[in-house]
Length: 506
Image 1 (cartoon, rainbow, N blue to C red):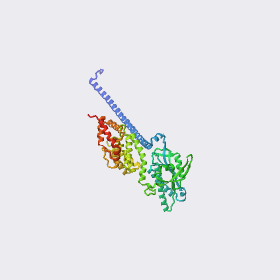
Image 2: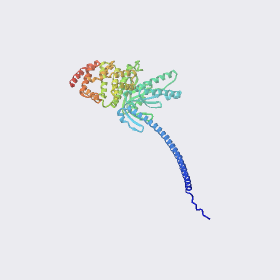
Image 3: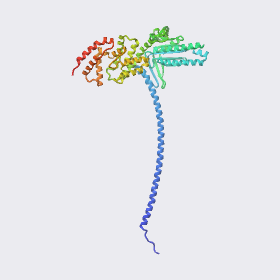
Image 4: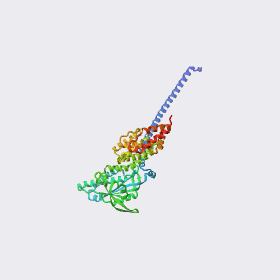
C-alpha cells in the first residue's frame, strides 16, 4: 500500500495559523476589556467611597467651624466686656487689676456706697396678703433698678429685704456722691407715692432706711457672660452702720459724704455715731435740694441752676476722658495742634469768658467746645472741625448735655474754621482763644511748633517763606472780643514788626 506522503499546502497552514492567532487575540482583547471594565467599576466604587468620605469630612468640618465660631463669638463678647471695663478705669486702676481666672480685684479711692433696708416687711407679710406684698416689693425693686441705671450707679447685691449699690464703680468719677443721693431721693419719693396710694385703699406698706458713706473701697469683679461687682472695706461697713441707726423714711449720710454734697442738698445734723478704731462720726439727714437750687423752694424738684452746677462737676470727668484720648490718639507730628493746644484754648476761653461776663452755663459750653474743637485732628487736618462736632455729638449725651446745649457747642466749634466768621459772643470768645498765642509773650516758641508741623506736612519749605506767611496772616487777623483786644493787640503788633525785620527779600 502506498503511503500518503503528500505535503499540506503552505497556504492552508497559513490560513490555519491566522485563525489560531485571531482566536487568541480575540480572547486576549476580551480579557483586557473585561479587566478594564472591572477596574473601571472598581475605581468608580473607590471614587464613590472617597466622595462619601470627603462629604463626611466636610460635614464634620462645617460642624466644627460652627462650634469654633460660636466659641469665638463668646470670647469676643467677653473680651469686649473686659475692654469696656478697662476703658472705664483710670490708669492707676488698670495697673492694679489682677486677672486670675474670672476674678478681678480693684481699688478705688472715692466711691459712695448706699445701703438700704426694707423695714416692717416681714411683720406685714405675716399680717396681710404675703403674695400681694411681695408683688409690690418686686415692683419697687424693678423701679429701683431703673433708678440705679439712670444715675450711673452700679448695683452690688440685694439679699432679702436689703440691697446695696455703689457710685464710682466700675468707672471712676467725681459725681458719685451727688448721683447716689439723687437716686436715694428718687427712691424715697417713689416709696412715699406708693404709701399714699396704699393709704387710699386702706392698706399698709413697708418703709425704707438709707445709709450712705463715701470713701475708698476694694471692688471684686467676677463673671463671664454677666459681670457682677462686690465692694468691701470700712466704707461699706460704715454705710451699713449708718443705715442701722437711720430713722424709717430718712436718708442718713456720713460727714464725709455731707462735705461732698452740702453745696447741692439741704442737710440737717442728726447725731454722732461711734466707729470702732475711728472715733465718732457726725451723721446728717438729707432733706432735699437746697432752696436756691429747687423749682419750688421746698427742695423737691431741682431747677436749671442745679443742673448746671452738677454739669460743671461732671465736666471734670469729661475733661479727663477727652484729654486722655487726645494724648493717645493724636498723631505725633502735630507739634502745634496737640494736647497742649487744647489745654491752652480751654484755659483761654475761661479767661476771656470771665472778662466778657458770661454766666455759668455759657462758661460750661465754652470749655466743652474748647475741649472738643481739635478732636478731628486725630484723623486729619482737613475738615477736622466737622469731625470734632461728630465726636462731641456722640460723647456729650453720656455726660448729661441736652440737644440744645450740643447744638450751641457744635456751633462754637465750627466758628474756629479758618477764616473765622463768628456770629455770637461765645463764638467770638473761642476764636480769640484759639489764636490767643498771636498776642502772648510765648509767641515765638508756639509759632515755631506750628512751623515744624507745617514743614513736616510739606506745606512750608523754608523759614523765610514761613515768616512771609506769618506777616500776611497777622495783618489780616483781628481779635473779636474787647477783652482779647485789650490783652493781646499791642503785643501782636510788636510781633508783626519783629517778623518783618527777619524777612529776606528775593
